Length: 454
Image 1 (cartoon, rainbow, N blue to C red):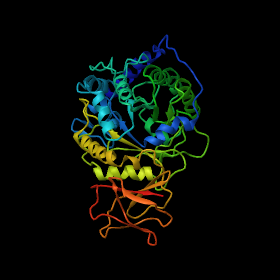
Image 2 (cartoon, helix red, strand yellow; image 1 turned 90 degrees about the vertical axis):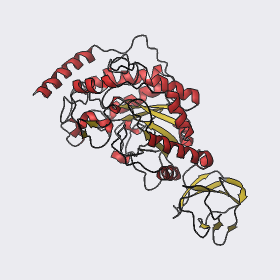
Image 3 (cartoon, rainbow, N blue to C red; image 1 turned 180 degrees about the vertical axis):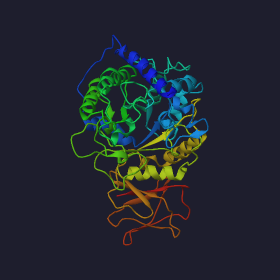
Image 4 (cartoon, rainbow, N blue to C red; image 1 turned 135 degrees about the horizontal axis):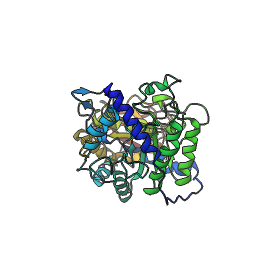
């Protein structure tokens, strides 16, 4: 009863609060014609590799409350461990003070890892905002002791370093009374129960969600990617999705937007359903499609099992696996968005730092076989993967042959064959057997790349 009373009181307070919020005054929005999709997507199709950053107040508990560890991602702790809005504000948000956050250091680590763009969670499902919002006081400047605009600092650092900047934004909001919130205890079942609707959601969409997205697009320079999530709730309609997509391109005509802006994705598979849905690229989550897909797509993955910081989750993928995932995704025509979940002080976990360094060492040597590369035109070989560029096939060798003989696709007509790691060393090729003679020692501990000029 005490918990229910707290929920109701919190909801009433938030309802009063939300009704008083308005779109910031004197906000000038210049509108222009959206650029053609191919022109907007060009840099992204070449980039291939980006960093996802899931960070917010949920880093404070790190997936654990009173000795209980939440199942799944730590960023879901408000829902999974049944916080009331009031408890979450007092126990979590009020203690979010990441004094060691250094945007330039984050960007440098992403760049050194070979990543070409960053996507930061501006607001996750808990509703807490990492920027100085004039639409709400539930943000980094008002509700936490930190009082620094994280979105601004990271945006500035990305622009200074020449890294493309993107923002994840949750359609779901457990804090706002007109949206998905603990006040609606069965609301998470909405995707299975079509009757679980919130009649106040359109108010949230028009008076809170859209104005906040508009703030992010008007106050932080170019936002190269807008990455939505939470599209599964029943009250968010395809009409809202198309309206949101149009608003974004009206404000920033060069921006690209993922398919979760609308209702067109097929669950975690992330790809588009048949039909007319808004969005520029598909979003497979924690998986890589078995074969290449004709449309633009990006696999987002964690390094362990949680998006947000969760020290109890020690199931870290190896550096070798992450490098092979990058190659596998590019060989099928996709992008790889690899996640880091910083701790409550604003530091990347040491396990993430080590894996980023390994990825950086590999891309420093082999980046030409990744950036700007296209899907393999050939069937997947047993020993690894192919990527392609005009006039070149790159053979990414996962399993270096013990006999030194690499058999390639018989359709490949080679003119010159070298190692990417040693361009001066020409490799012999037996065209009748489609067989390359390799050195006895692989040049890379994880994935070695053979360059085949056609």
